[in-house]
Image (cartoon, rainbow, N blue to C red; front, side, top):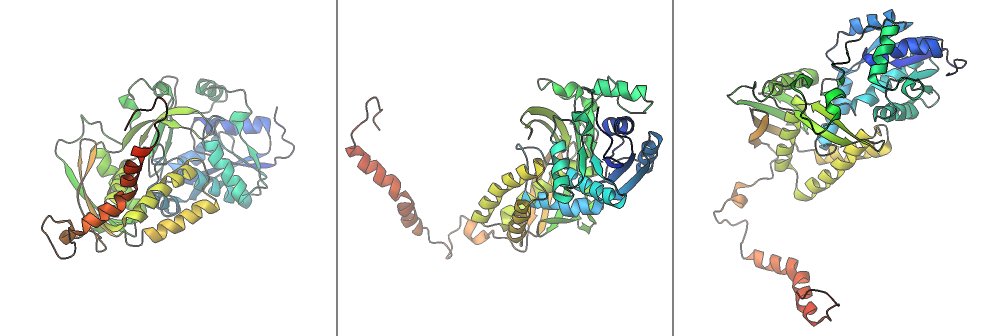
Length: 413
């Protein structure tokens, strides 16, 4: 039985979902004191006033909403987009970079309400517990951390549903429709239920933001996205604020079935899991930005950025947002993207986002150099000396190896 002696007031990261809903009565039973339900607005499709009311109805002493949507987009989503960070080749990190800002709001609430502990609803198998708790350590190491899934006797979502029923806690999940979902303005993730068998196709009832290929329009649609220093600023020539821009792209891409992924991923805690993710607008932005970078980044900078993007993705996925390394990588990316300004036109059709054109005032593409027509800027005779220099080590190895003794069993070259 957990001890309640040192916890007068607990700040709980609260979403109104199954896990956090049953945590409120559980905290009251096992820790006593008061629970402050902290709700962070990161663009989820929830009635936040209703979420507040639910928290209070199930035993929270107070429920507070922190509107961090603009900060979330400009301070977390855009930097990760500019970095080109993608985890396990597919995952655009929608849940990963939301957890640090939610935990940051939770810490602010804990201090504002005199809490001596923070709590979250993450399981002991998942990555989110790491993301929340590393943020606590970075921003408020003095606060006690309570992780009910690592303490209570509940072992499954079926157990959690039974606990909710016993304590009269209303939840949307059922035994038949038991998906665990996380949504913000960037994406929605789906786990559990039928998705736990990776040999099966994700059921169509999983997907919420994107149409199926069969239901997507038969006619393609074109969309033009404008960037300044690798930051999205416009759609089809109209400048939009960050939230309005993402919502519009989510709607356009979702209509055409763009942005679905089915991923078996490598969790930070060491196991593999299977999830389904929908990132409609984000898929358009990443596709467009890569095409614009092809115009504006020189070869060596592009190669280095691609290498660092993998490191950035691991940092974000593993919950290491508030670290000097992530800030240092941002500094490199900020400089590297100084001239990544321009527009990219995409063609959306039946789940695909295809490139249909890109322009930039800082383009490094030269029609004169790229053309098959001979010009003064490039003398083709120079290629011979270049190839000779590059090929010298290869040529010398081939010549000298003819005189080498052959090791036993080795095939002759």
